[in-house]
Image (cartoon, rainbow, N blue to C red; front, side):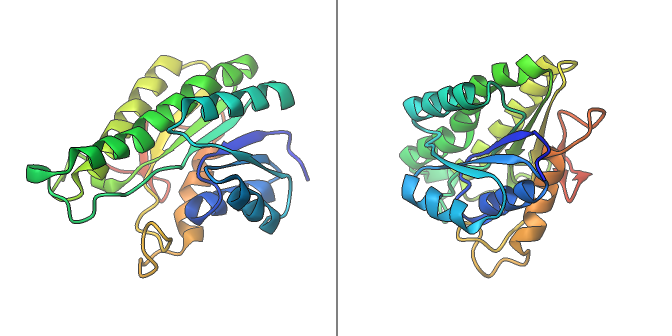
Length: 231
């Protein structure tokens, strides 16, 4: 049963992104499944029940982002939910003291600027209806409270994504658009590793919760398992 809401999930063709698409579609959302590889996106969408529309989306490519924004404008005239799920972890084993800064730059481009770029083009579509939910898929390793060493590019990119959450939530307060960071935990996906302790359904739960918050729900928060965690 359709509920009339439109959601865009970046990196929706596998892992947590695919599970978010599944759960939102089950709740009656029309889901635009963004995938860097168009063929993989189509194949993923065919696995899901409900109204799931695959669309090519590379968040690191401004032209690709502009194309999906034009599609949303033409097809729906608005957007209700954005889940910034696309991201990379490309520096396992790296250290801050001698990091490959090209890898750091790649992580920042995908994990921070990609989410920022996509948010900028869809916020006007949300403002039009006075309703929006922006969900940034973050990680506890980006928390400054207990910041440690290793994976410096990934860590810094998630810290910066959390800062973006705070900036957007502050600027959009009172507009009907809620913006939150969610740590899904260590989830058994290609990116998280198959040996991770959390099934993908559990990892997606808080993300779907944040995507479907009521109008009096939180904004500018950092959550895991639907509970606030330290920045």
